[in-house]
Image (cartoon, rainbow, N blue to C red; front, side):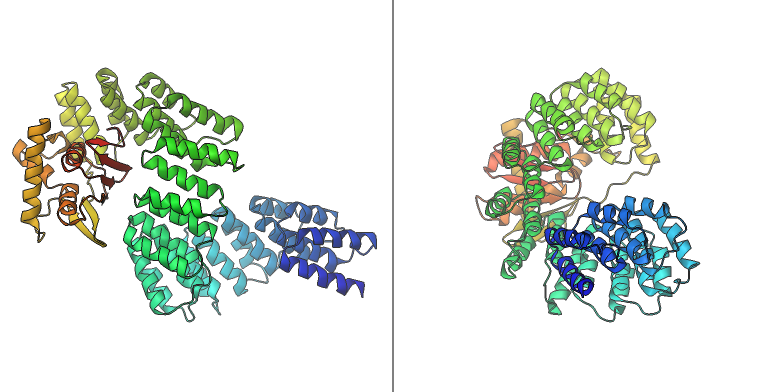
Length: 609
């Protein structure tokens, strides 16, 4: 009677995740001498795994004189649940001649999926095919999930097609894989064929689209899900759609989703609040982001980091650094992303000593190994502060091969600091060693060579732009006015308010010529045409039309918020600074690289981007 009693008690521990109770029962079982009972030992291993104590599960497993398939499946699952999937594979490889059953196969495939190791996954798959369990649909569903997570979608589909009775897990894994990889039509087709859709299958499709940058498609599916009256019992789908709002900088839609979050009672959920902080920051509303943060009863490292990065991106360096001090004083340990935001914040205000101090704290106090992104942020800080020799030395000594953006950042610093000779040397290296993929790199090269009167190399840079067939995506800017979003494309002259926009832009340009001596900088136009045509192209850049529309239709005195898919060109940057001064309006632009807050003739980026 003792064994059934303890089995029942242990199963309750597993269900309730009560580790201390499990330890107490373990001690009692050991004391009365029935620990050698296989069902009890196996159940204990499983309980420790469910309670997140892989070390206890592994210790007990090592002490077991006889290990059956249930014991192996239990300990491997426990390791997977504790994010020790590498240990899962190494422990199994040390087993002597164990022939896996379906449960062990599932645990091994899960480990490969967690690690993203398709090569190990294929090895397990091969062993599964020649085993007596080769027709097991549960293991096949795990294989579909593994291949989908490893972006081996054709293999995933082949296994999926071989499943006799497909369950929701395999359908959802396949849909999610197609959506994450941007294979929209296949994802939608498979989703439409899904016999029984539930919240998790809808979530898989929506989150997959968000992860692949297809935010509009995610919104469309979410709207359809709401029409189908699917009960949102899990907030994960809301987190995904908030992420779509953040990526699209769709603040109007974001506020609507925020309202839905509140009405469904998920506003106290930490990861939803974290997503909202990130969304409002990316929609250039850091006040709303700060308000969400201040209302949170429980804050994790993501909460603090989201607000720190948001403040840094908007040029509010002092606030970001103050938040970091508060974070540490609250006993929250910063992570890699936190330090990216902090060093980025220091670069905006030239806090070189503080930036170095933070970089040192990251490596020495928190034992975080710097990534290329950390080094690039530190390089940006040194370049902004005129420490170009130290910046170049950093490139040569960092433990990563420098890429095109790294050298381009240094070249941009050389141009800004007026270091022509060094700039030409870096430009030569960049042009000869790399085949630039970013059109703005060619513009930068051309301008550096032009400043040094190296006209032959100017021609070479422009010729290579054509030879390499580097093409910019069509430039467009969106502006939110009175709860509606208007989109303008570069060179667009068919807008219903074309004449009003044209007239206002002309007035603004004439005023800035009179006030500030503004002259269009046509070096940002690489096309072979005369100066007048270049000025005309600049005049119809999309952000200019967007700001004019915002001035014409927006509520007087309110900030004008613009999102641009490409980087703002240097001439438009100057133009927007002058407009903010002439009109007395704040203009907030989120371009492909950062946020620009134009206010009173100045920009938060300090003219370095």
